[in-house]
Length: 250
Image 1 (tube, rainbow, N blue to C red):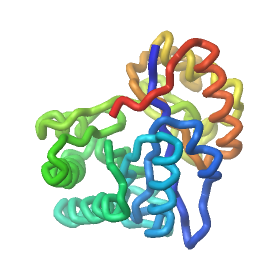
Image 2 (image 1 turned 180 degrees about the vertical axis):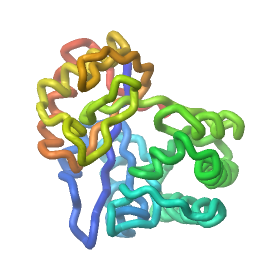
Image 3 (image 1 turned 135 degrees about the vertical axis):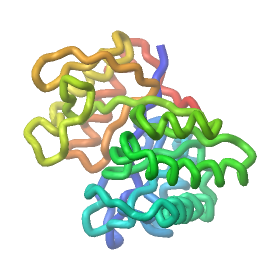
């Protein structure tokens, strides 16, 4: 058995990191690196790329709405051309510091918007397709299925499904919105057991006890979650003990 373990990293705000990136990078196989929309700057991009290279971690671009005030977690409705240009600029920022971009995962509210908003999904895919053409290889998209996965396939781009280890699930398979009870899972032992169950059995328990089927090739942790490092270490121990290889698919 094999799975990718990804985390949102490089999320520096006003020169201050929001996570213990130095501890998190060695524990994951893929890093979703903030590239200026909700967080991140040139210095954090360079440092994140260097850490990824040193730890053998795949580099992913983590673009978002241009909304640093809300950390990209408030849904917006920008004109599609504006959104495409913004995402393109963020991808270019990561490439400019030497990032060997292997995949793209939208952040926060944009991540959820492109699941059901065809125009925003098309804008994101347009930017990713443009970079793919320049790189000479198709860049995969990482996320939850919906409009974004449809648009990716139409553009000839791979789409990789993921599951969330530290977020609560609703019975319909959607995530409990941040700010609501049970939106976050804090107990390292619970998160670790969930990781093994997702890989071995393809299922996760929703907040009401419902068992939800999940087909995911990548598991996500958030670097800014409280006790993120302790959680990541517990997950790696549990996966190793279960004989599950942690490896990037890109």
